Structures are given as structure tokens and as C-alpha cells.
Amino acid sequence: MARYYFIILSIFLVTSCAQVGTISGGEKDIIAPQIKKSSLKDKTVNFKDTSVSIDFNEFIVLNKPTENIFLMPNDAALVSSIKKKTLTISWKRELKENTSYSIYLNKAVKDVTEGNDSLMKLTFSTGNILDSLQIFVSCFDAFSKQKLNNIVVGLYDSLNSEKPRYFATSNKLGLSAFSTLKAGNYFVKSFSDDNNDLIIQKTEKQGWEFTEINILERKNDTLKSVLSIPKNSDKIKNARILPPGLIGIHIPEEKQAAKIFLDSMEINLSAIFPVSSSKKDSLLISIGQTNSNPLKLIIEADTFNLRYSEKDRTTKLKHRYIENLNGSEKILEFEVNDKIKNIDKEKIKILNAKDSSSLLFDTEISFNKLRLKIKNTSSNEFLIELMEGAITGESSAQNSPLKQTIQVKEEKEFGKLLVHLSSNISSGIIELIQKEKVIKALSTNGTSSDFIFENLLPGEYSFRIILDENKNEKWDPIDFQQQKQAEDVLYFNTPVKVRANWEVETTLEINK
Image 1 (tube, rainbow, N blue to C red):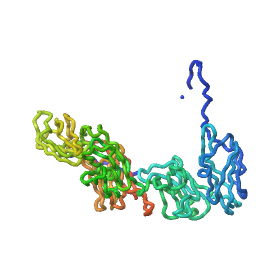
Image 2: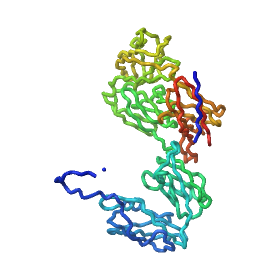
Image 3: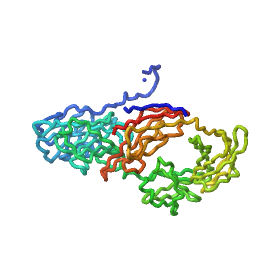
């Protein structure tokens, strides 16, 4: 086999005739209400009043003022009212001395007609000066490393605080900026705030710093916040019928030991199968023979009522050919939507496409997959015939007839990648990526820095490495209960080109 060496180094005016029609009312107002005058000017010092009046340039309405108008730091409850174009905000509790505050109107003020809104902020101090410290926080997705927009970043007095003392929102570059901060120690938490309540929900993408930071010491730093949906918020979901004989469902690995009941009958483990080794939380469940509609699927406290119609039950088994990517074996593999119960080999014929001679083969069943291993032939082009009834599923469904010419790739049509890591990784997963899809994955164990990806179709590939700290062979998101950050992912985006019948050698520079 030829060898090829390649090293990656990381790093609209419309004109028309007059016509009769209705008056449109002019262009749509897309501009939010603007502040015309305020009793509190931004960045005022020695402010001692207990109310603020804000005049707008148009009539306004309030949108959930108790939720969307607030004071930061949150040292007093605000009461809001409107009269025509004027908003009045007041509080009863005396504010702290020598402290800088900001009043936020977070999409709280809308115009009457179009409902436009925006984020508004007024800053003031009860002392002689405004606190002047500032920090920046960069937000990005823990797995993809993409910068995240519209993420709420909060500074909290304690790790268990529900609402932040200060907060800011990230821009399109993932950057959030804090200003007029008071010196002190804070905990940083960021979250997507999907319901706009300034409280982190378990189902929201989030990032936590589990140790406090000193603002004065970190004022010149840009902090990094990596966000993910927590591990403990993963739920049993996406259950659906795959007619005629399967249910596809997402079940977190930690819940896969739970008993599964279908129409009050416990499902045997042999009737459950993982979709693939790379998707351990996606399972297939065999329905078997039943006339129930809907089907009642119960897993722990979760119940799914799945519509299973007569049409679903009487659907023929449709075979999907799975291309064999192992040039050293002549295998024809088919997949159906049922657990295969029986194969009638007499109803299966495989011919050499060149001379129509019959070929011997062995059959192998793996849940919903049928593999036909062809014996003693140098040919790589075959005519296969599956007569009706060649495959029978647990639901009693049978296959529809198939006659298809299939060409199996030869070993010389594949390429090979020899991958060298610049430093050993004790526990990791090296994933080979093509068009954002994982093609193959290999685990590291710290004893070797060399890995081989074989039987690759020609094309461009890239890599990523999951630093699998807990050695469970998958990427884990943040676990705030255990105070563990999401596992890190290293990306190597410079493409490597694989050619047929060539070995390509590449080095991945590890900078951890």
C-alpha cells in the first residue's frame, strides 16, 4: 500500500401603476419606546430619593413589571406604575449607603401599538462616587466551543444564591460586560434563562464557577464560562413508533436499568437494543404481537401513550441496505423496523452479477439487522433477491420482495489514517469527523500515542478528542450537584485528505 505523509499543526424600491386599494397605515413601527426625560440621570451620585419618574416619547404599557423591572444589587423591592407616557418606579426600603445601583427595565416597557420593547438601564450611587470596577465574561458552549449570545451571566454572593447581585447579558460574540461593580468576592454563574426569570432552571444550559473570585484581583481578566445542559436534567423522551414492530426512545444511561413495561407486560432485555455504540442513550424496543392502540409504555415515573394504528401493524418490513465499509469481507447487511424473528434462507438468492452464478452465503441476525456473508468469491458485484417472507419480525410482519444489484467496495478503494498524539491522553475518545458526523471513534488509555483508522472512504476528515475523565466512554456535561465541570473537548479542524489505497499519517498537537 502506498504511503502518504501529512502533518496537522493546531492552530427591495418597487415602482408600479396607480391602483385602487386600502390605506396600509404606513410603515410598521419597529422602534422601542425611548426615554424623553427622567428624574434620575444616568450615573447620578448622592441619590437619596425613593422614586424615579421616567417620561417616554410615546404611550406605553408594562410587561410583567414585578419580574422585568428590578434593582441591582437587589436591596429593595420595586413598585411600578404608569400614567400615559410616564413610568414611576418607587421603593420603601432604604438603600445601602455608598453603594452603586442600577435599575433595569428588561423588556418591561412596550409601546401600545406594536409592542416593541428593549433593555434599559439607569445607574446611580447613594454615595459620592460610582463603583468603577468592571469585568468581562466570555460564554461558549462546552461541547461545540461556539460563542453563545443572549446568555445571562450573574455575580452571586454565594454559590447557593438563587438570584444574582449583578448580572449582564452576552452579545453575539459571547461577551458580557459588567461595570460599576463594588469590590468583593463573588461566584460567577451563567445560564440561558429560557423563561426570563433570572433564576437558573435545571433544564437550562448553564455554567458555574464553583470557587469564588475577587473582582479587584480579576478586573483585568476576561473570565471564561462554558455552558451545557446539566447531566441530571436528562429525561426519558422522544418515544415514537417505528412501524411495524419497533419503538425508538431516548433513555439516559443511568435509567436504562429501570424496568420497562409495555401494555402492563415487562419487556425482556432481549427485546431492547441500542441504536449504535455512539448513541448509548438511544434504544430500540421490540413491540411484538399486540392489537392495542394506543400502546402504553411505562419506564419508572414516565408513561407514554403511543398511537399504534392498524396501518402501522400491517406495514411490510422495508429493508435498508447498510454499506459495508470493510473491504476484506463480502457482506450484504440490511436493516428493518422490527426485531427479526426468523430468516427463510430458501427465499434468499445471491448471484454473481457478472455471470449469474449462484453464490453460497451464511446468515447472521443482530436484533433488526440481517447480515449475509458471501463465501468463496472474488467478485464484488452481486444480484440479491429477497422473496416475500424471507424475513419475519416479532410482530409477524414480513418483508416485501427485493431484487437489487449491489457493488461491494474492495479493499483498495479504502484509505487508512495513522494518527499520532503529541502527548499521551490517559482517558479520552478520539473521534474522526466528516461533514459534522462521527465516522469512527477510538479510546485512549495513556499507554500509546499512536492510533489507526482503517477502511475509510476517500475524502476530507477532521478530529476532536473528548477528555473522558470518568472513563464512561462518552462526553459528560456539567454536574452542579457534584460540582464537576463539563468534560473538555479538543478540536482539530484542519482537514486531512484520505485517498484510496493510501496510508496518511498525521500528528495531533495536544495543548491542554
